[in-house]
Image (cartoon, rainbow, N blue to C red; front, side):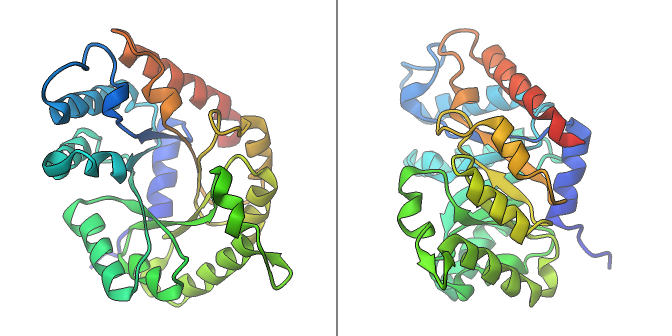
Length: 280
């Protein structure tokens, strides 16, 4: 039986194919749907049409997609159907990340992982490690799938705990080091463990890259949350792990008019072009 290719390898292949580091974040807010889709009675169908149109407009430019599960779950009974249909719209060679920031005790974590990887077929997911080793390792036991562990997030409150001193170092460093030890003990985890490191704290991003140079990085916070592309690229210059720069609102809501799909494509093209120096 042929071993499953690692998530890191599959992501690197897609980045080379698309010549892109762009991760398009699908955060479909019904209140922000463009005019051609808003005003209808069926919110779920409008959200699905929006997602399909955005994927069609950006699929050749995206190295990956990140689906924020909160926006789908808020659709109520239609959430699973819209989520599955959105996943089917994404080309099969493009990795898709479930952004649910799961993190619970071992048995619960195992079922979260099963739903994410086996039932829905996501390629990776975001995980919170606050509850420790047994809340993370179940996600690392699916061959060929990826885990982006929260290390230093881009939200303003991220510093409340992540920057706290722990044995003379910021807590996010302790998380980064510990998680690599956990992954090393799991045979199936080769190329699976990555980290979420926000663009708004480039010093932390630089330190996480130095601690885990081969790990994939998912970097939110460019643009709306204050991260600057040039600083981010400089911070991750060393290391071989694939890097994804996530953009959600700047792409999805580039226009609220009839041209929303073309505006989204232009925004994705511009971001891809600005990240081109890092591809080498």
